[in-house]
Length: 140
Image (cartoon, rainbow, N blue to C red; front, side, top):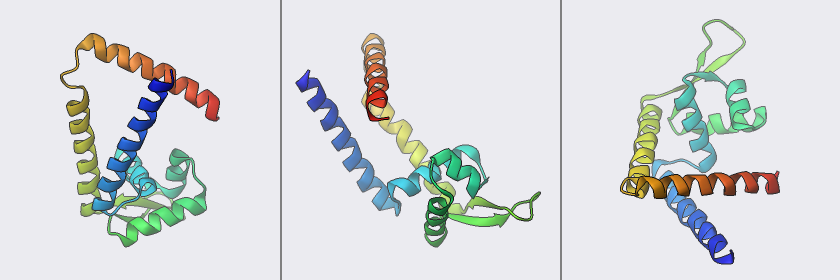
């Protein structure tokens, strides 16, 4: 069992290191990339909606959006139906970055799992589901 845990921990470290390097190359942090990913999924959104989706405070989302505005990834646009609200919207750079993240995500999945036999893949994902459920129980 300890060997399995060591492998899971090694996997976490390797994935985290790779992700950190890739995000730095793109000019993002993990938190900013999470916001970019969510905005890509949702489309233009209010900061309040993004804060809820990311599970962060309004103050934290303001800081994340400020940094992404400064980096040229997003803009704040007037909400078409609510004068008090603004919509966080991608710039061309932000849209390219989000599409690149998605493309690289799909490519990595193909490289990791593409030639894995179906029965092995199903067993792997079932095992991961069990491990993740247990981990969520332990840490929450």
